[in-house]
Amino acid sequence: MGILENKARARLFYKYLSKVYDQVNPFIWNEEMRTEALDLLDIESEMTVLDVGCGTGFATEGLLERVDEVYALDQSEHQLEQAYAKFGKRAPPVHFHRGDAERLPFATDTFDVVWSSGSIEYWPNPILALREFRRVLKPGGQVLVVGPNYPDTFLAQKLADSIMLFYDEYEADRMFKRAGFEDVKHAFMGPSYDPEVAITTIGRAPE
Image (cartoon, rainbow, N blue to C red; front, side, top):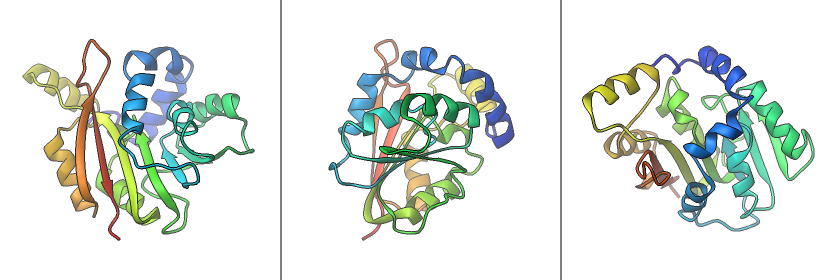
């Protein structure tokens, strides 16, 4: 388990990263990648959508181009403060919650779509969190998770493993199917300098 696959350390990490997150993020996760991921979903404006690990609201902004309202959750108060500055803290179209991906504060069968980008790599128990996603999804609802693709070289793999969760499509397939998702598929994306830096997995909750 990597050093940042720990909730307290991840919160501390984002306490400082939140100050520059929106300046750093486009080098790793940009608008083109976000649009490419959104295009993988069958999404309509009236759907109920949850953004888990919303951070400063970058994915939330993209989701609001497709739907009327978004529920957004993050464990970092510092990341959320940046998001509040963009959207406001309490008024729609974004409903913010501070919380844990492994214990979502929502009722079963609530959402049509659960989205999470740039968050799974910090979860101590990703299968537990994915099972929570399935719980809050309506039957047949869609899940989409963007995470870091496992590097190709031995040294890069050792470094990646020491920091956080990196995984390939085979591990993603295993995790999502163990969590109970069906129709699991994967896509690779990234900025021009590293077009496969991210792995995006989509699936559906059983009907």
